[in-house]
Image 1 (cartoon, rainbow, N blue to C red):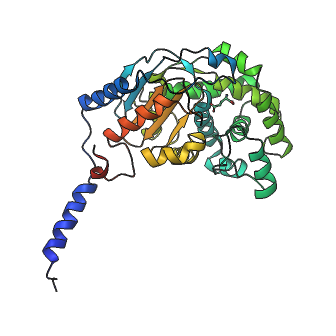
Image 2: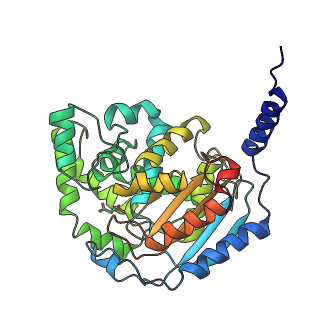
Image 3: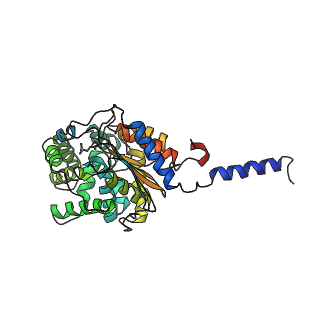
Length: 344
Ligand code: GLU
């Protein structure tokens, strides 16, 4: 029997279906306008400060500000300085984690490292102690230093050179061009990374790293010094948005089935202690680095990256967070948002 207000309910359901319908792809003009608006709005802000615990990072020009959005059909949109390079730093943790999944499957990450946020700083030693003593095992994640150094130690290869080359090649395939290391940053961090050496030794002592922790820290430090510009990072993010296929080169660079796990760890732990706030505002899996880059992924739609060295207290680029949030919300990038709710 049809209820008296059945017609009204039918109308409401129809409206709800329209509200949830996928948005039509944004036009190139709309995308470019969103990038240009964010660039103009945040170009002159003065908040934040370059990282200086790695001496070479303090010397990078704080005015560098570049935005690149790459759609899953391979269109590249840019604003500002997308040529200047910064060191990739922690953003490399995403790709080394993905490399381990390629070689050993996603379970290797959960079983050896863990996939839970630590609630502590990215280079916390207490987090290792806590995981080992209180939680009794792999309860860290590959996006904080103890987990990242362990992930690097898990990359397979017959020699240091072989391991390093496979990590560098993997990053390059995501960027769609051969990447290189910023030797000044590598030397600077290698001379001042005693804390990471301690973390590597502790991870070895507890059996997370199986052997040669010194080599793992050294390769990890080198991967953090890979030089990238905003366009490289945008393409790397777009490859994750495009199920592991680089939309610019057309090459499948990682297994489709591992992409969800990579994005899940980015969503829970990508922006240090502000990962929750970030997800709350954008819904996007993302990763920041102390070099000033942030990548963010709108699955099936686009990858976006911003490079701008000054960081906030949590260690995330100030301009990058603001610009990506504005652009993604304007373009309906949030995978959790019904289309009507985020239209601004
Ligand atoms: N190489 C840096 C470190 O280990 C990376 C930190 C980061 O970008 O979060 O301290």
